[in-house]
Image 1 (cartoon, rainbow, N blue to C red):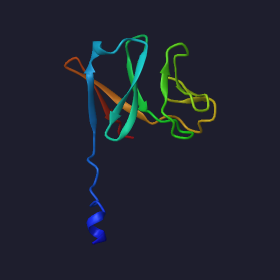
Image 2 (cartoon, rainbow, N blue to C red):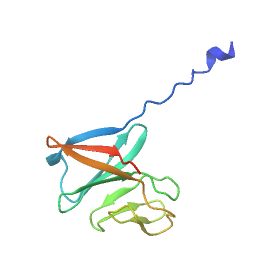
Image 3 (cartoon, rainbow, N blue to C red):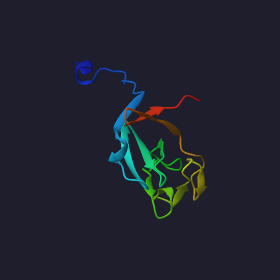
Image 4 (cartoon, helix red, strand yellow):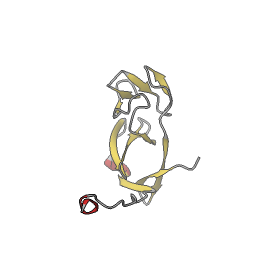
Length: 117
């Protein structure tokens, strides 16, 4: 009877890439959080138009990060952690850089993908 009350274990579907829209859909010098499977990913379009993407959680205590164009950095409001636009931790308590995701442009569409290490 108890087996009936427990949901069956189902393996989560693996996501290898996510289309986030056309190049012009995101303004320069802005950022947004997207869902990559069940994980948040931050996508930043730099002032020069280049796209970058990183894991969307701070390496300190897993708070969601955000892009601050006034600082030109990725920022964690929980404990004032900061990352540069290469994902490197540059101030505050984060002990490690953000995991990097790849960006591809295909047929004017922006695609975020898992980078092979």
